[in-house]
Length: 292
Image (cartoon, rainbow, N blue to C red; front, side, top):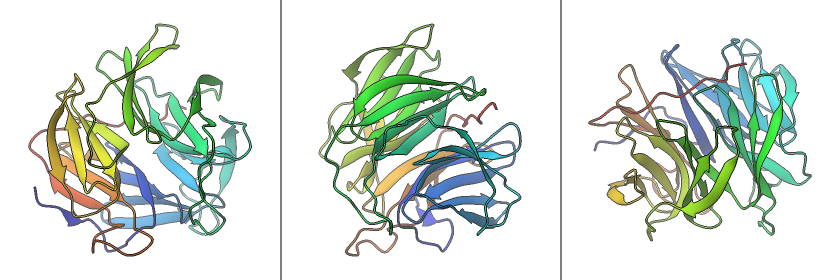
């Protein structure tokens, strides 16, 4: 697999890639640098936000959601890069000292948002995680928030099987990918360990391909791991970066795999912090916009 940097920029903590099929645009964030980024028709844009931002998801209404520590906001995509126009949409996790982390929309266009203890100082530097105060929340298009899980460490990877009856969700603090049954009323059943363990790094963000396999980015592992629907390891995909953070399928045929990465504090690989791309042999599943 031939990996290359999509653009010249290197990011401190790139995360949350989202491919918008309707506009053929790639969205992602730099959490530590407080940037919401978009690449559309070869044009790179960013919006500098007042807080760390963990996800940037376009909405059916024409604007986008950004997930900040103080809440979920709507971002006017026509506003200037250094004066972004934000409007508070909801506060999913009201617990002080937490911040948003992983966020994805399900097939109904509802936002699922995982939180964690804030681990970034004002300059984007690392802070220790000392408590399991994170949660998982569902945000409906009318801004109604439904708490789903509590006592989480670092919520990552939010994906569903084809029927929507099973949720796959990582807790990076545990180093484990879990599965939850999703009841018809939206409640989650007991969690169970799902993915086969691996010594190759810590599970971070993921994408699902058209065969129902999950491609999981492995923080500090130099790789992606492709898990079969039963959680077994199908293959390990080597990467030219030490800290891959997440991935998404994109392009007109959904056969381009984009991988976000972070820079280490003390140097590392030449491509660390790059937004990577490579062509793959099968298509992925499309991302879902927020329905509101």
